Amino acid sequence: MPSITFLGTGTSTGVPQIGCQCEVCRSKDPRDKRLRTSALIETDNGGRILIDCGPDFRQQALSVPFAQIDAVLLTHEHYDHVGGLDDLRPFTFMKSMDIYAESMCAEHVKQRMPYCFVEHQYPGVPKISLHALRGDECLNILGQSVRPIRVMHDRMPILGYRIGRMAYITDMSRMADEEKVKIEGLDLLVVNALRKMYHHSHQTLQDALRLIDEVNPKQAYIVHMSHDMGLHAEVEGELPPHVHLAYDGLCVRY
Image (cartoon, rainbow, N blue to C red; front, side):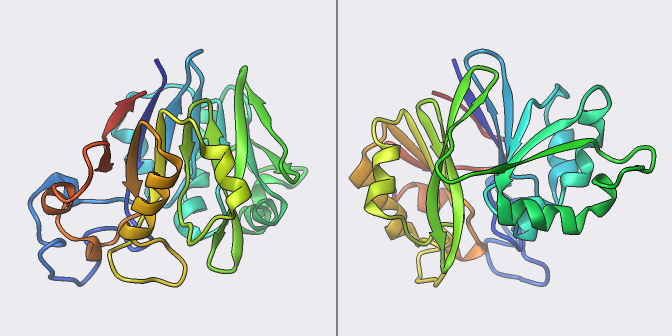
């Protein structure tokens, strides 16, 4: 049975937010401690796919048993989603890491980590095989079909991914109707909601609930939340039975 482990479920500032004394940032509930959003997918055939690799990746990787990662899918180039790529080094000792991203995102990775792409590399740098995705190109990763999903992060086009009967979307503000067809018939939908109030580049909780209601997955989990979402225990009680707030370290089989 495939599974997803939520390595991080917070927005770019993480929770607690530095310098904040709100009730969420002071909460003792471990579900209110949120590292930057990332997830590890384990497929039916034993493959392991990392979605995004933010600046908390080292801490996140130490929280789960070490095992090889077969590929990394990047949603976009913002630092909270790519800032930990250098920490993939232990996973590249035996072979290079396949990383998939749109061409713009791939170029940003090369600019941030030029030492990984020079002819004569310094010993110890992560060995990266960077693959630029083209359009609606579907991937086959160890026999697992992976389909990109076009979404908008304000005015910035980024990607979500459908992996089998699960889809993972983060940092979205809106999605075209033709893309929603790609996330029908899901066992699990993971989707972002920053907070309850309007934000120009992220969905609100109500936006996420409307999308979930429209595409009707069997179950759904919310990620990329800020401290403004509220206390986990309280917000979780406000949600429909098949919708949940994800939290760091949660593993869901689907």
